[in-house]
Length: 295
Length: 97
Image (tube, rainbow over all chains, first blue to last red):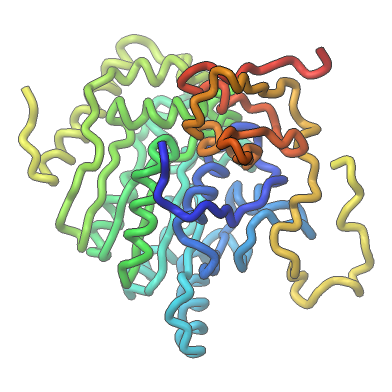
């Protein structure tokens, strides 16, 4: 497996992410594709911690830590300042977790993409507020245990479809990517960097701590999420042109669910219900992409 | 952290508590965290580089022969490399054995 990207990491070892952290893998891939002509805005998320306790920094690019709800607004400001200086080369990116994208940062993100600010918004999605102690977010999937949806009160709401929400803004580029498919992820980041206007990447990043999985299957579980259609890989250009990048062979969702401690309370009938939900979402996506339904 | 870092007077801090040295987290010895460590069998290794690609801590460094070697100073022992290795050339070994 040879990747056609520069052999240079802009992230240094010594970060304080948990062992097997999917978000760290995601950052490593993204920085490789972006290069060092990048300014990163980092709203509160796991990465505020992973980047290192003051005065340490893992990243070898300029980085601004900002408040939770300001990811989109802060990037707009940095972009405006660079434009005044006449710097067209530097890429402004926001790197936010799912809480800072789906919930708290959503108004700033929506505002920034509505103005079509020239920046890339990365959301690495670990499906809950992990660094504060696994509280549910609107990205937490149906059926998951978190510390705020404990025991029998597991989450009975569906995960918000953030890419569709961004596609509804008619932004130039929106895509999903997974840490288990590095070629696809790097290609999407390089493509996003070459486009002007607001671009959004939703990266699936597993969390061994919050998902109650052993750290070594962190990448495997991200791969299974794609293979079971729970997290399909696709991209949308200009809010219209859908391209599905990975056609799964139809593995059942229960294979993915039974490996994770956060889903261990689910019964067979719950899993059948989730399977039906996943199939419904997948058919909807196929219809949007203009791909004929199988079977 | 075993190393005492970040202890200084506020008067010595940069304006806006900016960090001037990129990648300064390299001082942190995250290798202290692990209970298992990976060992590569270079006889079996096919140099595919999956360990190097998926390692969250950038522990693997490519050597002159094209093999990937671990830097145990940073390895947290997560085991992703051993799990992703297509030929099972990497084994996780208990620390202290």
